[in-house]
Length: 419
Image (cartoon, rainbow, N blue to C red; front, side, top):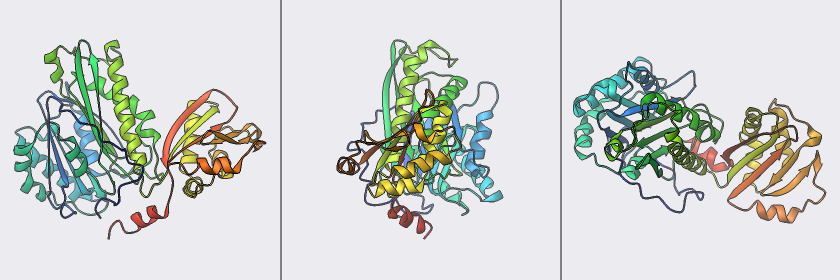
């Protein structure tokens, strides 16, 4: 099944110009992995010395590419270093046994030979149908052209090549000062279904020319993912292929950017914020492209015993089919929110609970708000973005997650995904 059509009504109204990042070149090709008439392979070439970091699914049934990347990230002294990234759509190479592992090795060998680097410097990711063997020989037919055609700045084409049920390509960028030099951050992502927080929640790749050592980059990535990609849920299902990687070419050192070896370096403060902004942008685009979605839902939980407790309650609300279908029907059904709070297993007091839809308080201290106005709330529920807030009245814990509504289109998309 190719990318969904039409484009999600929640899609961003504009696409940012994606500047080139020194030390990064990209190319795409149609290898016929599963789809016809579209690109399905992405190759990213990176200059020698590029550092890498990654977070992956916590699924106990990970894909072969996830296992490959985990192994490459461990590396030795000065590692991990990356020279190339190969991503395919249409086939997840997951639950494919020995043939899946052989496919990753063959893919890395093909890419290494074409790029003149070691297989250990090749990172891989696959997305698509689970359980179908991946014919890695198909990469052989396009790899030479990919290497020859790789060019700076082709991020939008890259984002299109890795789409599955996505309805629009997801890109984001930022520029920030590191020392006296300006460095660039650019990222792409794909994801629309089988999305739930568990270290990554889709495929996403972020690149920068900042000179950051691998351990520092890994720490920044691991910390930033918590309130970005790990705060998004579409359907509560975490993929076997969830992958989020960051690559730093270090090319900005030639412009005077200081080399960062530790994540605690104060010179990294502004970079950290810009990096988080890119991840937040990409992760919101994933929520906006939820399969069949018509409403973006921002859930804020306040007054919890802790941030962790607030997160679990927010996720209980965000993953509730009853809450999501009520919002799809433009019904501010706070009873379903109360249900989701109560089942979360976290501290809660019914008689202290307050709930807002679209900034309008609909329930207060365990009962319907005395000033409840059905007409005002109904009008607010017709908007494309719904702000849902819960105050538990128990403490200072606060957290925020993004999700979307659940429509009959979600069932249609997933009902025929393999057909």
